[in-house]
Amino acid sequence: MEGGGARNVSAAAAQTKESADDGSCKPLPPCCVKAQAAVAESEAKCHATVVSGWFTGTRSRSGKPSKAQYFNNPMWPDVSFSKMLVNIQICSNIFPSRNCKSVCFKELDGEAHSLKVEKILYQGKSPYQEVLVFESSTYGNVLVLDGIVQLTDKDECAYQEMVTHLALCSIPSPKNVLVVGGGDGGVLREIAKHDSVESIDICEIDQLVIDVCKDFFPRLYVGYKDPRVKLHVGDAVEFLRNSPEGKYDAIIVDSSDPIGPAQELVEKPFFQTIARALKPGGVLSNLAESMWLHTHLIQDMLSICREVFKGGVRYAWASVPTYPSGVIGFLLCAKEGPPVDFLTPVNPIEKIEGATKDGREMRFYNSEIHKAAFILPTFVKRELEAYNSSTEKERPEKPTAKPVKMKVMRDSAITAS
Image (cartoon, rainbow, N blue to C red; front, side, top):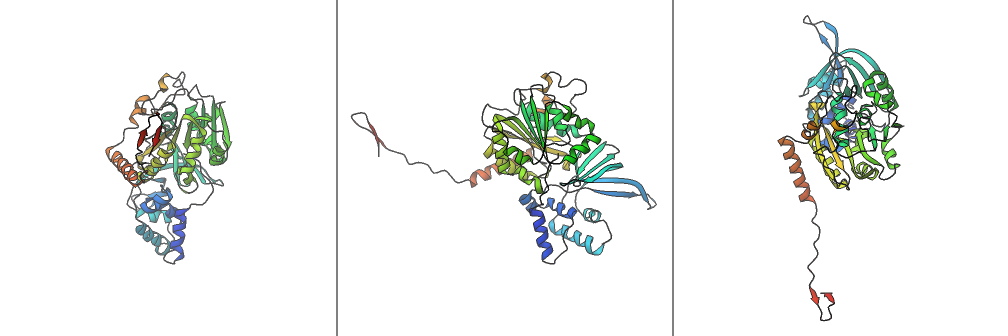
């Protein structure tokens, strides 16, 4: 789940600045700006959906600090804006010497998944984001961008396999595929299992992510070694604008969370650009957040995509333990053309020659889980159906033409009156 740019964090940062300018409180630290993700109002405006993680140590029973270190990965953030401001005041005024992240998050109602850190393998900064890799005791190597866990050795298979094969197994014989983001190489690895594919383009903005994954995630980076892969380092939006119309059978968006520079990747112009680059009947597989935390965002994305993709739009989900709330969603969209039935794989992975041979075995995806991924819990169906009903009512009714009276003349001419 990589990708992103160097532009500013828009609405959340603006709101933060306004609060600071009136003198009521000091400017919010970056960790607390991201904590606004849990505020429904600001989240709906700027699609800030995540809270960054933080390091903590532990203490022994005697109270002495121990050498053990943990990376705390927020699982279920729940904080009101007013409560967050109180914590910031505590952080900046009452306890100026304390770690801001520790103070802020101790007071939040929520949960975090703590990963024991064996050692820090890499820590650096690109022009776009902070990059961290550490070795954990139970999840193997962990990739963290701007404080947010992107993948781990243990559970990367669930995301990489599902985001790829839900799309490629829904269409017969995909040939040209584009990956947006995905600098780690995992989606490339999965696409390469489809022998019908002739070319694989990948557009990743951050060269550092690619280099770091080459060194610390060889099981993912192997995707770059396929001769069908062509790497483009740069802005994916610009790349798509310059792509020939109707070039791709499938486009897979493996980007970072829709906050700041990646926000435009969940807006209508971007989806329109994708649709233009797809062939008739071509498909999009796109990150679509957690159904437990972000139904408002899912609703917005569904609404936009149903306007753009007339061949069908579906929401699917999978379990990924290290992602917020432990699940992640996918938006599957088809461009108008040859019919696409996402619910039933017409190109089953089990029948693709060599797709599951030694060294390429699936760890998560299969045809049965493909079908099950589209079955939604009752509360999700209810919320999405209610939203669809409300948006239908809000749309202005199309004017209906008045009935025209027709007269048939003796010479068989037809006139309207």
